[in-house]
Image 1 (cartoon, helix red, strand yellow):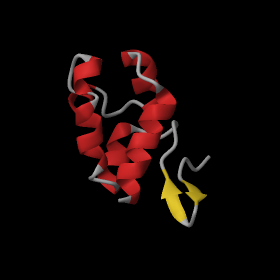
Image 2: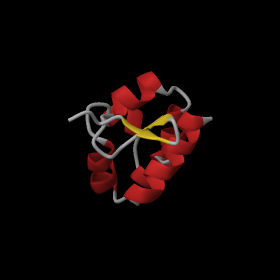
Image 3: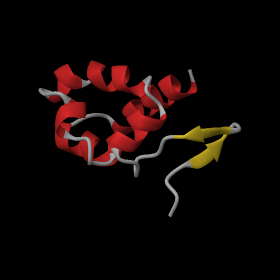
Image 4: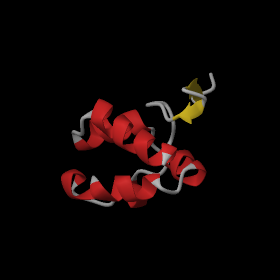
Length: 77
């Protein structure tokens, strides 16, 4: 399954994508993830690069829908 889906003519980040892939394709998302570091209690990009966005949300007790909204907004610029 291709985790990149079309939305409004732009690729959309989904819960099934790994953090590394998201940050590689959309560098602006790194700053959003860094904003979540305090809530997570550690550096997400340092410690969860190979986890999916959903796994990160579960691991750190983050609101998945809010996280997806924030990183998608950053990706779309």
